[in-house]
Image 1 (spheres, rainbow, N blue to C red):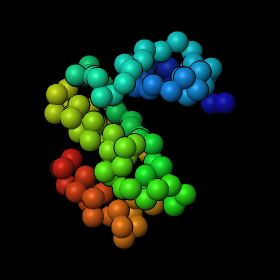
Image 2 (cartoon, helix red, strand yellow; image 1 turned 90 degrees about the horizontal axis):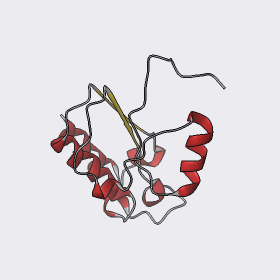
Image 3 (cartoon, rainbow, N blue to C red; image 1 turned 90 degrees about the vertical axis):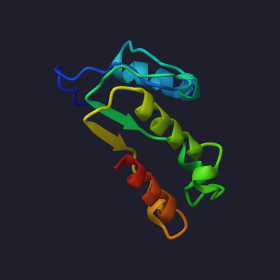
Image 4 (cartoon, rainbow, N blue to C red; image 1 turned 135 degrees about the horizontal axis):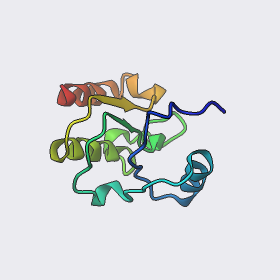
Length: 116
């Protein structure tokens, strides 16, 4: 496995599921977990925020509930934190292929517009 640039440092993650936390620790060593994103009030400054959300509400194999589904609505927590935290230079969202289909594209476009 290729190591991340030593000049890049993670300030933390937000995760509540123990399985990915174990995997993250195995790959990256010790880390700070901010915990449940719905309970975070603000984040410290970071140059880059990477974010994803459980895509089961958008995926072809999922329930097709869209951005209003229980899981995919977590994207709005990112927006809330953007309003209450120092702004990063870069936002990087996980690719969810089905996000650009005819059903979900209008809401995704709203997301893009809200970030502008």
